[in-house]
Image (cartoon, rainbow, N blue to C red):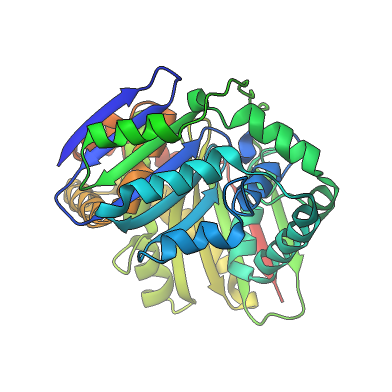
Amino acid sequence: MEFNKKVLTNGLTIIHEKREVPVTTVMLAVKYGSAYENENEKGIAHFIEHMCFKGTEKRDVKQIAEEVEKVGGDLNAFTSEEVTAYHVKLPSEHLKLAMDVIFDVFFNASFPEDVVSREANVICEEIKMYRDNPRVHVADKIKTMLYEQPFGMFITGTEDNIKNITKKQLLEKHRKIYTPKNSVLCIVGNNDLNEVVTLAEKFCVERKGEQNLPPEIITQNLKEYEKRKDISQANLAIGFHFPKLNEKERYSAEVFSTILGEGMSSKLFMEVREKKGLVYSIKTGIDAGKNYSYLIIWAGTNVEKVQEVIDICLKEFSEMKYIKEKELEEAKVQVIGKRKLESEDSRETALNLVLEEITKKAEDYYNFENEINKVSIENIKSLSSKTDYATFVLSP
C-alpha cells in the first residue's frame, strides 16, 4: 500500500492509495450535504445527487450507467450531512473510463427540465419508503429529537420542499458548489499517481464558485411517542450527544459504542436479549461529522416492554463507567479488527479517506489503530457520565 496526496492548481484535492489488487474505486466528493441547507431548501443536496445521473451534454441517463456496467463496474452516489459523493468501482485497467464518466456526471450535469418534476416524484416515493420502514423512520426521527431545525430535518427533505424545487435552483446551486476547490477525488486501487493526476487534469472543469456556510447546529433533547396502526412491534431509539468527530474523543466514542451495543457479545445484547428475552435485535451506532456527533441505541420490542427496555439501556449506559481494563483492551482489538476487515474493500477505504480529509486530513485514516489504543478508562467514564438524552418511540 502506498499513500499520496496532491492539490491541483485549480484547487482539486487528490487522495490516492495504491494497492496491488485488480480493482479500483474512484470517488469524487463535494464538501456539501444537508447540513448546509436552510429549512426552506432542505433536500436540495440530495435532489442534486439524483439529477447528476440524469444526463450531461455528453451522455444521456442510459449511457452514464451503460459505459460503467459494460466493463463490470458499479456506479452509485450518496448524500450525507457534510458530503455528497459519487463513486465507481471497476477493474483497474478501466480507470480512464471511470474518471471520464464520474467527472462528467459530477461537473457537467444538465438538469433536463422534463426530468426535474419526474425525479421529484421519485424522491417523494423514497421519502415514503423510509417513513414506512419502522427501523429507518426511528433512526431518522431520533435526529430530530437531538437537533433543532434545519439540521434536525431528514436529509431527503420534505415532500413540499422537493415538489417546489425548480431546475433553476438546482442548476444554480450545483454550479456554485460543485467546484474543484470544494471537491475531493479519492482513488484506491492498482493505478499510479501520475496517471490519476493526468486524467484528473484532463477531465476536471475550471469553475469558481462560493462555499456555503452551514447554518448553526443547535442541540436539544426531546422525547416523542408516535402511534402507527399497521405495525405489531414497538421500535425505539435513545440518543446521546457525543464529542465532535474532529476531536480526540471520537475514538473513545467508537470503543464505547462497541462495548455497549455492537455485536452479540455487547452489554446490551447480553442483558436485554439473552438475559431478559425482551428483543430480537438491539444495537448501538455512532453518527458523526465535523460539526456534530451522537450515539444511538436502537431496539424493537413488545409495546408493553418499551419502558423496561429503555430503563435497562440507560442503566447499562451509565454503568459503562465501571468497565474493567480487560474489557477495554478486548474492545480495542475488536474495533481495530473491524477496521481491518472493512479496509479490504476499496470503496470503504475511499469513503473513510474522503471523510477524514473533509473533517481534518486524510492521513489520519492511517493513525486509527494508534488512536484507538490510546483510549483510556477515564475516556469511557467521561462519556458514560452524560445524563441528557433524547428518545423516540414508534408503537402500534
